[in-house]
Length: 163
Length: 111
Image 1: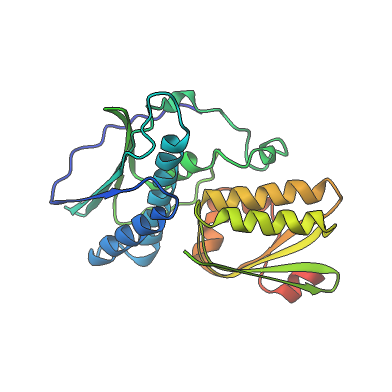
Image 2: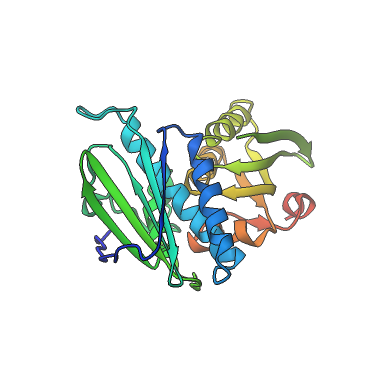
């Protein structure tokens, strides 16, 4: 998979920041917050809100898994930080982990989903899904880990297929 | 987060009705149920997603894993789903080309 590095501009409006313990149960909390935020902005319809909930679910799942992977030097109790901002017709979400860092260009390239070989892999769909759902995507190295920054406009016809 | 799981039999198929949200927190329970069906020699499985409010790639991975297991025994996993938001997740990942997605349990076991 080719590394996609779109530079995401900083948030325009106020930022809601939430520190979440790195437990699988909190992913539902992140979805609730993001869904509520999208619902407040009339530019974002229900379908686009569902895109945001899915993207944040994937990002938080990756963050928690990175942190619980018990790599040397990783503090498994460090919080996952979710930041959200709404403004100028755009929603910016970022998810920061302390999972020890991650290189998106090092992702294992999976075969096409309809290729029988692809179906040997249960994982690896999360980041391709985020790439489809978000208009902008950036992986930033941050102290002790990675921050995934995702920018969303009101609508996006998602009719492409994960490759 | 609660995940509701209910297994029944219909026309030779094991029907697993799922309700709630399927994510990293709840997917392990879904995986356990599917593995138990396979261990019980149930290789014809319908997973009814009509009452599922949310699914992400963790849930998709569990379904891919179940399909892989039953196909080793010439079985199949079919899905029931009409909710556009859930169907869309299968469509954008191309998994609608992999799984048969039916509008009802009756259609799934007949098809």
